[in-house]
Image (cartoon, rainbow, N blue to C red; front, side, top):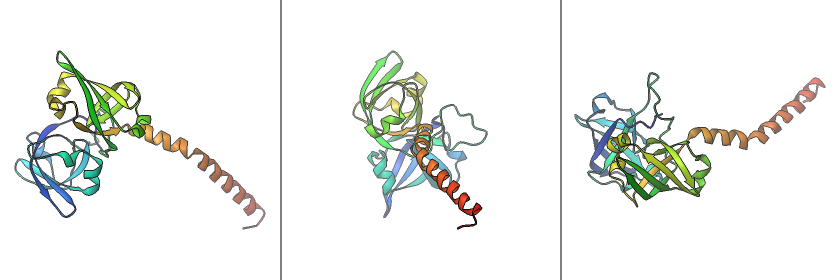
Length: 218
């Protein structure tokens, strides 16, 4: 799991096609000394596994499902990516809980610059909008951000100078794609509500079964 607080900006050093997908060699400076083989690393918000560690880079394998569900298939050599290691029990959760499971790819449709801050508008899959609320959390390329407003399937997000400086959003522009992960809490609530009727039916079946047992029937 992750928090959406970007720790490092990496650069795609090499891309190798494999029989199952692709292998990325990612160069980074801040976190590479503390990565071990098998560690989970969020790359643009996608949870991947470090399979090899070099002096100043690490490798991750991407299967076809990952490439189809995210914008990682669009990356080329020298592309800049957001990096975050998985959280620990002693980690401050400065953002919100993320799984690194991208739900859809959104598109930046507007970018307004006001002094050092920015307001971006992102068009996302209408199916995911039910998990988005004004002032709620959303992950954009693995960055924990807050939704300012919603208009149909468009979310507006304000970026502070620190976020612009320390993530790949500083180079993103209108027309660029971003990985979207909505807040997990909304999904669990929906699941519980949707299956509430099923739970009630289960209670009724168990109650009927208990009556049979009391009567000595099976």
